[in-house]
Image (cartoon, rainbow, N blue to C red; front, top):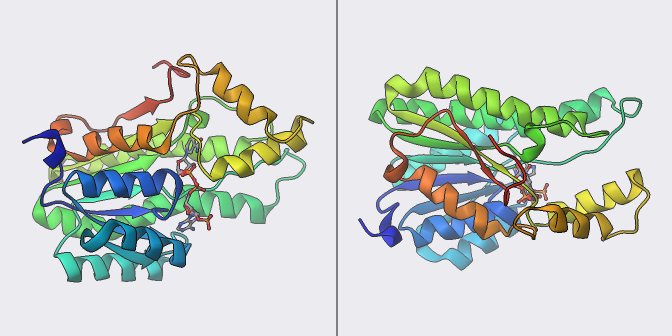
Length: 259
Ligand code: NAP
């Protein structure tokens, strides 16, 4: 099979697919021959992304903290296309808060989206995957899941949890032919970085834009990654070329982290 057709005949659901890394994954999946459901809290943007991708894409209004919308979305895809072969748990948010600032509400939102959203989306697709005896799940961790940072205990720990969940579920589901892997991006130029840069400006007392410049310069390969540079490894992990890979978290970060 040529590289262009690596996902021929496969169907995928990508959470947080409307913009940033998720959108690039949807584009790369369709280019590789898959049908893609673009699931996002941003329903209008999800529709725009799906429309731009043409007949092989559909939009889903999905809040990964709301089990009813996850279940409705999964049912809609299974009804339209018969099955979900690939789930990408890309939806995530970044928060910064010192130990004094963390409230139960901030804690719950961070974990409900980054951790709960991943767990419950997996729970929703697993019955169909088990029935067919195959499936590929790709979770989104981060370099922040590899090492803590001041004022980022919530986000960093939520992304460390993703590495652990990926390992446990890979072992739990291996016998059903379902592979579970994760990607740990480094610094990637997406709308999320507008939020991240402004938060660092506040916490590190820097002009807006400075942190973003600095983190790009510090990458061994010399620049911030693009969403497309995350999407390509995601296509690989979703494809049969990665059939002997499970339980792994792949660093895609220009050399920032070595493991
Ligand atoms: P992004 O630009 O903020 O895109 C994330 C998308 O997920 C947004 O459309 C967002 O919508 C959506 N989303 C948020 N909460 C949701 C929910 N409850 N249900 C459904 N969708 C939801 O982020 P990104 O930079 O592409 O990041 C994608 C993933 O990679 C995240 O898991 C992130 O933590 C991870 N990551 C990113 C970087 C980076 O440098 N960019 C580095 C490491 C890891 P709203 O705008 O409404 O929130």
